Length: 416
Image (cartoon, rainbow, N blue to C red; front, top):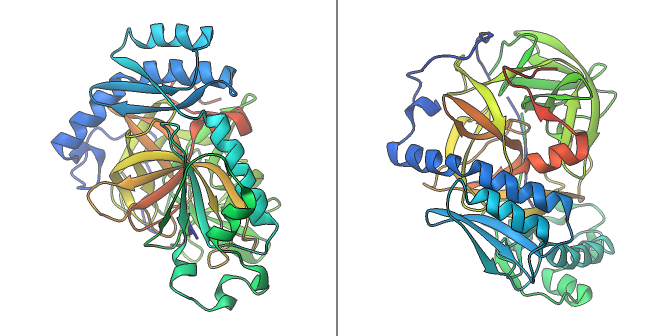
C-alpha cells in the first residue's frame, strides 16, 4: 500500500522576502534547460486549463473524462455532446493556445461510480491487496495497483492483525462487478505516507519542518505546505494524516530550534488535508534540505495529465521533473498509519505522478509540502504532498483544497 511520508530536517531562518536567485543545485533557478522550457510552455496554457476546470466544477456529472497536455496544447476528453458551459470554456481557452476535444468511452463520473463499487467491496473485508485505484484521464477505464506488501508475502501481522478476510484483487473485482475496463499492475514500492527546512518563524513559509504534538506525546513530523486564506483568516495548509485536533503544531525539531505555530484547526482524512491555525506567508523554500532560498507564490492552478510539477519537502528538498498521470484513490497501509494510528482507509482524489528521470520523487517527512509549477520568477501552487514510493508521488490537488476548505494560496497581493 502507499506510504504516508512522515519523518526528520535542517534550514536556517527564512527571509520574509523571496530570494532573487540561488546557486543551490536543487533550486528551480538551476533546472535542466529542456525541463525548464517545457514547464514554461505548459504554464502559458494555464488560463485555458483553468477555464476548462472552472466549467467542469459547475457541472461535475457532465461528460468530462479528463484533460491532458498533449503535443503543443491541451486535450479535453469528453463523452457525448458538450455542455454550453464547456463550449464557452473551450472558446476562452483557445485564445491562449491549441485546445482539442477527443471522444471518451467513459466520463469521469462513470469511472468514479465504478471505483466506488470497488471501495465498497474492499470495505466488506478486513483488507485487500489493492494499493490504489486510478481514473485514466482519457476515460478508457480504471488502473488498479496491487501493493507489494501483498505480492512479496510479508507477515500478516505487518499488514493487519485481523486480516483473516484479506481479499485478493481478483476477489474484489468479482464482487464489485464493474462495467468499465480495469487494468491491474503490481507496484514495485510500498506506498508510504511521507511524514517526518528547520528554523522558520511566523508568518510561516511552506516547505519547512513541523511536528505535531498532543500534550507530551509526539505524533508525527511533516512539511508545511502553502500559506492559505479562507473566510478572512490565514492558515498553514498541510497533509491530513500528520495531525488531528486537539494536536498542536511546532516548527523545527524538538531539542533544537523549536517554535510553537498554533493548534491544528481541522483535518479532512478523506482528502488528506489539514489547516494549522497559524499565519501562513506567501513564500516557500526552494532548494536543498538545508536551504534558506525562497520563492514567492504568485498564483494557483488545477491539475492536468502530463503536466510537470515540483515538490519541496523538508527531507528531499526541491524535486522537479515529476509528471502528473491520473486522479487516484489510495488505501493507507497499516505499515505506515496516520498520526492517530489509523490505517486501511481510503484517501480520495490524489494525483498520481512519476519522477521522469528515475529519481526518488519524495521521502519520509515530505508529507504536507508544496507541489507547484513555475510562474515567472515565482511559483504556481498546485497542491500538497500526501504519499509515495520510489519514483511515484501522490499529492492532493487544488480543486480539492477549494472544495474542502474554500482556501486559496497567500500571495504577495493576498495574505488575508
